[in-house]
Image (cartoon, rainbow, N blue to C red; front, top):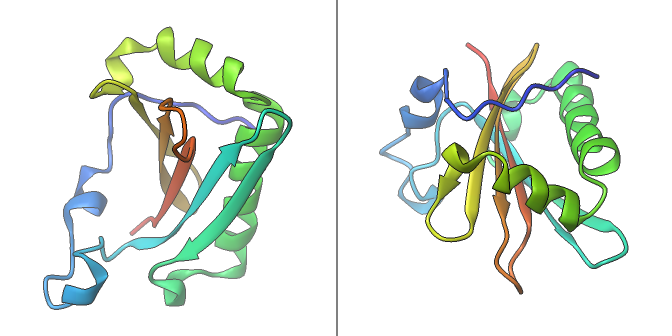
Length: 132
């Protein structure tokens, strides 16, 4: 699977279009399907999926989300050293002192990939947004 990590977001409209009526949801974007949160324990990645607007998820989207996540944590970044090296070589993706944000445009969804290099925190968030 060919995944290109960009430092510029070409789908800002999906991130900014929030449902202001959904107070309990914390103003989540209308197109957000959910996110995968993962951490690396020094040996392997542990990932958990958190739904948002689950009604947007189709079978094709489910498959794509799984493939994108697997490509990132099984093939592209097998450990935190690989994540750190990639992030340090992409300083324009840096937000704050330890967070790096990348964007992926794929067939059914766009993704926001966040790496957090702070010790004791989750190391990766992969947010999925359904394309219009």
